[in-house]
Length: 305
Ligand SMILES: [Zn+2]
Image 1 (cartoon, protein in one colour):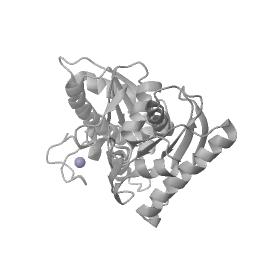
Image 2 (cartoon, protein in one colour; image 1 turned 30 degrees about the horizontal axis):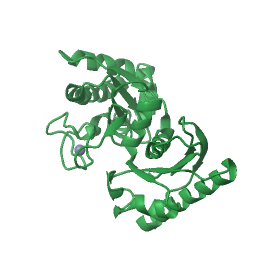
Image 3 (cartoon, protein in one colour; image 1 turned 180 degrees about the vertical axis):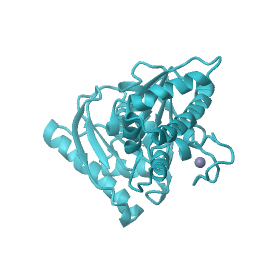
Image 4 (spheres, helix red, strand yellow; image 1 turned 60 degrees about the horizontal axis):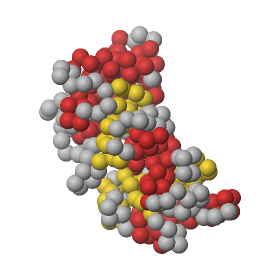
């Protein structure tokens, strides 16, 4: 879990990390979040003279932002946790916002990160899986049921590799950091080789690595072109582990997207700027959004993964 006290201008005033402790079960995770937030609030009171005025929390899985309920997380094992109300109660009644981890990170990238100033953006982190956040005029679209942006489960190879979601040929089976790691481990014969190793091998001109890399890039471009055909974003922000390859990814990816578009306008394709603090900063922004005025006290935030 990453947490921070966030100032009105999005400044990180204080940061902390704790283990989620998910092996102790969902109730213990909820208690860890509440305790972490309370300690952070106390820290703010000690160091800034007054406690935080609001709180934001971002969690993975299915999140009902409007009702403040963490509906489901396979990783954390919880179901229908009224996290917003629990947290508000623990923090002496301050307003609390609950958000989805990727959408909340996307909110931060869009407002104060790589998408700053873009009225329409799409944030796509390429990690263990692939998710997406659709930014529209300073907020992130959740969809009617909280599933908007799940670009990782767009089918790019019909009848292809099975995906845990139940479909076959989903983008994240080809274009995630995990998928590249798997493919490169097999192609290189080194079971410990991962996506970062593959990127290095690409840079040194290894033809096997180039083949693995291009397969991922093509799948990504197929998925991204579907998304930009639907959404027409001004900026396409690519983050997550695979984006750490820098131009080794971005140069061929921009080219592959460009080859595929016909009438669509090309968005600018840029790397994410906030790294793993995006979730923290986004939760802070959610908290500040709850405050109609602009008080001077810091707003705390907790993010659990
Ligand atoms: Zn899938």
